[in-house]
Structure formats: structure tokens, C-alpha cells
Image (cartoon, rainbow, N blue to C red):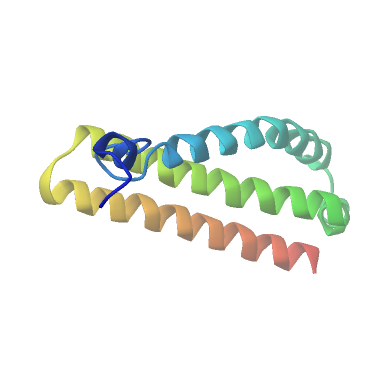
Length: 123
């Protein structure tokens, strides 16, 4: 005998059976980026135009390096999920699969390249 009704089993799940997890992730990452990006722009802007030694000294400190890594990682994950959602909404068939793979691969490549460059500067 089942104690859950059909409505209770379906509650919180859309057609993809993931509920609002995608929307919640996008909202949380957008709020996080809204706080991180202005702080990062201030740090990046103050280092912009300096000599190589000054820029390396700026990003060798822990806070600017960690903030830059977070902006790169969270920003690219936010991009990948948003681009995937847009592609799924507006394309069909095998083009959808190819474009999703390209968007996710691009975000991983940019993340890896950015973190590698940051590690080279910071260490």
C-alpha cells in the first residue's frame, strides 16, 4: 500500500525530474557573482596599467588570487548552465547536442586556462 499520492510524488519535479535545482543554482551563482565581480573589478582595475612586478605582486596576495579563482570558476559554471539552458530552449535534434557539448567544453577550457594562468602568477 502506498502512502504517497501521485501529487506528492510529482511535487517539485518538472518534466526533467530535477525540480527547481537548475533555477536555484543559477539564482545563487548570480547573487554570488553580483558581490564578487565588483570587488574583483576594483582589484583588477587597480592592477591595470602597472608594471609586471606590480601586477604579479597584486595577484600573489591570497585575497586577490582566491577572488580571481572564484570569479573564473563560478562565472564559467554560470555561463555553461545558462548557455545550456538557452541552447535547449532554441535548438533541436543533433545540433542541440553538439552546441551543448561545445558550450560546456568552452567553459571548461576557459576555466582551466584562467586557473593555470593564475597559478603561474600567484605561485
